[in-house]
Image (cartoon, rainbow, N blue to C red; front, side):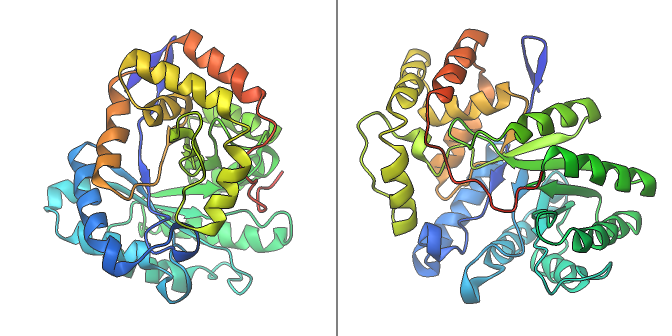
Length: 327
């Protein structure tokens, strides 16, 4: 754990949204699975112990593929190494998952795919915008799993400050601590005032903030002048919209990277850490794991962070906002 200007700097984990996702990431089992195995081993060898997944990761008939791949890989580890991991999955509050026992089948399926290696269960998104009554019962059910000893920790994702305060009250009444809150957070994440309020609440309550999409689909890793080159149409459309708008910002990322002899990826991740979050970038290749872990060996100066903050404000176009983000 490092410190920056008296503030604690969080670590880094990794996400597995792309593992099984054909629509956004162009996943192919024949092409990708061996590389994902090597990526997993490199990530652990590099000291990345927080792994984020979800029961809905994987598209179509590949739903749950991310959890299944992780379960097969974790099973091969010695028991002592498995115990060092924080494996966190998210359960989706689909409309048919109702009541206090609404997650029971999904929770059991996730534990089965992960072969028992599950430390933290998370609510994937808040239903406050369209079905607040559904969320209350599901949150009670998640708390039940912790109190029963079926899982050690509980987290939530895509919640705003008002809903977060309500959740904290509900969980405190049950004697359950909230371990983490996930938010979209990067130099190109949407300018949502609620996110700053969530960070403030979490700092006060000692709750870890997990920053998902910290590299903005890899856009923050691309030098000035880069052209859209993603494998899928959806990501190429986002690149075409954001690359021209973020030229100055990425130019500064490149300048800092060259000065320090590091990658733009590391600079973008350490900006997230400087703001008190734990970034969980997606990993698909072993070299990405090595690069991401190297960010843990250094930190941005206050001046570097402030300059990136200023350039961030100048970007008028941002990553799409999660439609389920609550108030």
